[in-house]
Length: 364
Ligand SMILES: Cc1cc2nc3c(=O)[nH]c(=O)nc-3n(C[C@H](O)[C@H](O)[C@H](O)COP(=O)(O)OP(=O)(O)OC[C@H]3O[C@@H](n4cnc5c(N)ncnc54)[C@H](O)[C@@H]3O)c2cc1C
Image (cartoon, rainbow, N blue to C red):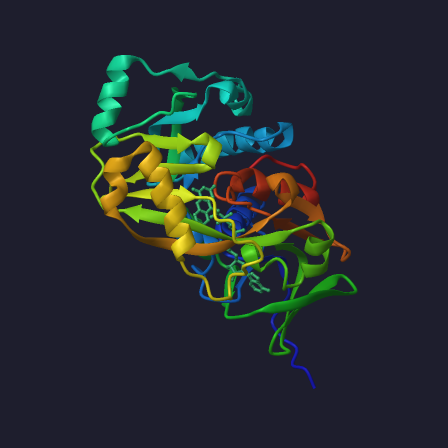
């Protein structure tokens, strides 16, 4: 016979302690400080895409909906910085290499309506010292935007979870894999893989790349969600203080300075679809070939320093537009499809999830 937890039901369960789950729980506490929150992770609380995320935040969007999420997240990140001293996040200059014919389209992606500006010869020369051998193709241009941001997604999630768990009545259940959620009268039962049950009155499921196998698997599949490998290489040479990021817009890739780590992070777009987070995930020779070709084209001086990196999986939704929606079970909302941008869009996604559950009461 299955075991039923005798513990009192929590008001809100948040399945997932990545950046989206952590923000959801934090905002829920802010809206209603007395709310009793149950955090659930099938691994340790730091396990997931967030732990390996590069944390680059370009407030851009492929379409109006994504731009709205980006803009709202920028506002919410600024609020968070005011509330939480030591928020792991800083501004950095950003430059872009893009096809001359794509410059207008790039402008259109900027969520705040700002525009790119051409990089002049002096700045180009200065950038060549930071990005050794910097090459811009004959049909390409080198552009600047206003500063953007880089954060520490894992440190952010930790900071937020600490805040939530410091409050009496809030609990973290680690190592509890939710296989299904069903309604029993007013309560929701979160059924664990071992048959045990946790209960809450409402639930947000933010499962990251596990979206296709947990309690919202059917809903995620029905909405066209898939999983894909995400790869970020390390370039083992220290960036100078204040170094900018360089985005290769046409290749969907970027170089990000990791000053604390004494290296650069080179994020590329892996073509490896349907790679879940529990499968064997490794940086393969074809990933390296892609990264080397990119560096060879644009920053050949970095080629000898390309060594190792980080690899995980993320959930991608059609149009790379995350989905925050209700599910078939009343009182259960899912927030899925970080689509390689789940850190930078997380505040708006968390806010939307709570608005769906509780209505637009007080802003986070
Ligand atoms: C290498 C890499 C680089 C990236 N770089 C960037 C970047 O520069 N900028 C950016 O914006 N985004 C980036 N991303 C994407 C971003 O990190 C993710 O979209 C985001 O972290 C997803 O957060 P999440 O909270 O949804 O999921 P996760 O962080 O994966 O957390 C999922 C949580 O759900 C829990 N869970 C899942 N299923 C269950 C279940 N059935 N029962 C109980 N618990 C469950 C897990 O235990 C975990 O706690 C990157 C991703 C990777 C992998």
